[in-house]
Length: 368
Image (cartoon, rainbow, N blue to C red; front, side, top):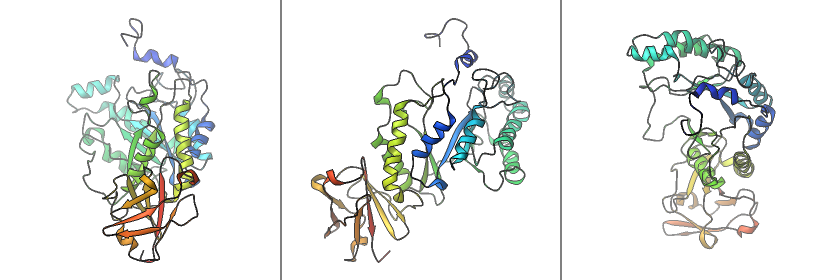
């Protein structure tokens, strides 16, 4: 700030430049819908309702003169997107930061070694209840928890209200960021769904005017991350940071549209899938597996040399001579041969295949 802004410029002064003049929630929702295949039950949008600076994107009565209705856009940005997203048939969730950098009550509780809780009692708990009661999100994505434990944040009390009394008690999901002692680090494949929250800009969760093209994930890199996540039983939450004018820049739009194009061909290996016996191939590391119904899917991240793919982890699927292999997007069956401890699958001419960036084999055998 000292380098780029005049003397005495404060963080709060940014609000007047946040106009959101080109903000089009319907266009955002349409983009998000197009970023995946037409399977709505498995897609959701999560908006940052309030980040660590404490600025609320809705007219919160607990953030007087520090919300999008009072200063900046003079609009309920959150409510407008909630309406547009739900109209598209997508599930709607909200990110919410517990801590606030500049709030005096938070600083006071911190100075008191977290033995007081005025900030939580008068700001955070009422604010979260306001969000849930007003906008009825299906996901509440908590963050900013790391400076104190769940006892200070009164997380147990709030979550008890959420699942027993709130209007969303039957459907709402939460993450595990409710105190410095609650965030888990899992070292094994966990049996229930988890989420990989990641960002298309490799260096920032927000929009950066100085970002270079090399700072942005390529479509291939995005699909790699998606594939690895799904193969390990997770969901993926893809972040794009909008501009102060309320737009999503073209390179972010293109990445999402590319992903949607890929999923329109290969979505059956992603949606409603489960982890297979192994996650990635032992012989060819750039191959990741999923399974659904009576098939195993091998997502091939790099086109095989000489159009022949060797797999080391899927031999058991080819013990039956009736095993069939097709490339999603192409109806023609692929030929294959067992060679000792591996199977060789003969790909089509690359110029004839429908998919770009990564390719999915559908392996169906009577033994499944």
